[in-house]
Length: 515
Image (cartoon, rainbow, N blue to C red; front, side):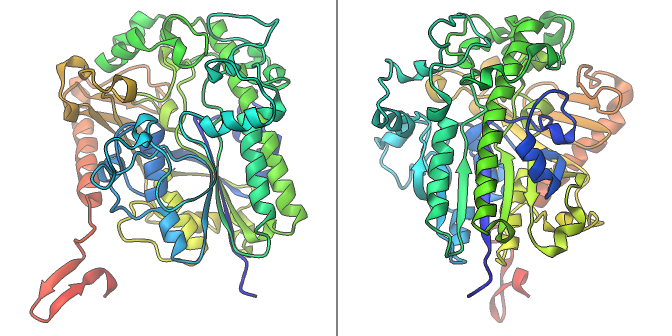
């Protein structure tokens, strides 16, 4: 029998990169992930390339920066020409199986405009075998609940209101949700993932297991709603008042004045920026409870892999699509330019003996979500398409950081209205194509460049919370110029190169990337 090489790609939704007890979070409880960390390599400075879900998952599954795949917001279609992880894995004999979702809107040049997928912010990226797909409207999960005898409210999303007898209207609450833990969406995902794994023990398999949590609504089922004490949660990083915070930048002011709690709590009222510090701590305790629930279910998955003898044949990648502001800077969600929206977890369990020396190690090198696809293809012995912007993490899992490894990260965000607000005009009187921002960030500084708004510049050593914008200080102009030039060089180096390796010659067509 050929060498067994399985891949389990676990992608959670909206999990902050600083929220693992293994790397020092003071209150979150993730014992099963901690155990996986002790047997894996952990990447402390891992960043997604964009947000929210659709753009982030496009980068994750194509290994392209947003400037190349151009899925700039949820609902923006993805070009079918891009090489994707599921299609590349099929070239190497893997049936790319998926439990969960990718939030991919299909290419309108190949899809009728009245296709129902356009009404739900997308569906599955082509190439996946859907084992238990979860569309953005959660319809498969709600139908599963009905099959289990649940009498769902109208609308069904009201299962994420506080349980009877625990009414706490208005937003953050410690109350349990109305759905029992054994029927939660996290349980749904794990049940279908385990069912699939039990059927493929005798073959090489690749499973993308996508969890909806800790995505809002921020309310956990019992007993996870009581798993964390709000008093133990760190307080938000923010200015003394939202008015003072809003002075930093027009985009920040826009979100502080417009972002609503109802997007994060089923019964939320008022603005996200209205939340007091105590309310933020209650919300964080619920967020941590959703994480603990996922952690328990990951414990079940790892236990099964060990019991079935597959753990030592399986590359396990645990990561998130993007992160969450969680009350920092008076914001909720995955928006803007702050690290809290883009810094995500990354754990790689490489079972090969070559990785033994790095088990339990925490790597501080900058890594990016575009590295996932090259890592998985490297593990199965496949060629990485030359269009990929990322690099395999296996060398960092097996020894010291390579001398030519990146010293900075780049991420992007587009603040145009989208989906239910897509017909509205962009803010600030801008055009759609003026709504982009780009970030370059290293250990020392962070530079944020806008197409049509003022830039930002932060000293990450003196001001890790990014509370003081230094862009208006003329003394910083030379350093800002250096970072702007580095960003321009990055964009030139990574611009679309699908055909740039080919060349006509007197002897005919050659591909210089293969010579």
